[in-house]
Image (tube, rainbow, N blue to C red; front, side):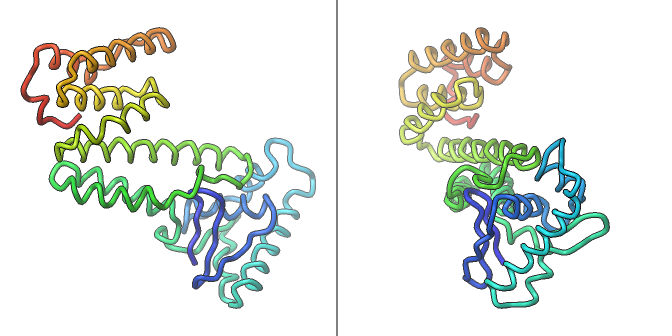
Length: 257
């Protein structure tokens, strides 16, 4: 069985698409899929489904939802054994699948792997990240309710998605593709104007493209926004890059941010 949470919830069993009926059942699957092989307590599931004020019948309702979910898996897959994918474990439930069965787990592992590859094999890092980013089908955990576990996980996954794009840029800069990276960086920085790593990457790409004045202007624009919105000065990485550009350091022509 494969589970997708990088977009609308998607379950497939031997290429058979399984429809999970209803928001609460989707939330149960997604919450368990965030930690495959790890028991999620009934308390956490109750909180995810009903928040701080669950009805008195919530515990019984949860058991009913689990039974309904297992029936849906068996009926649609045609395989009785898939009932055991959702197992009772202690005082909770566990998704009895390996992490690689969940797209989000594979995505995070690929981003980590690409981060290790960037310094010595940037072309392979780009290939890994391209495949990883292509697994996204929309916003993470799109249709799985509004519980704290899923909302927090969605934010974390979106942050990792942005990290993947930053790592992709690092790899492109390492290969000398600063002209090609510049338009994407400008777009990313316009959507994340306080992201210092993106600013630093864009400054380096502009500098390597012979656009030193634009690189300096980018620094000042982000510096003003940091001061106005957060009351902060740029961090040391961004300041050092600015100083290097002003001194026209040759090392910036080769250094990845």
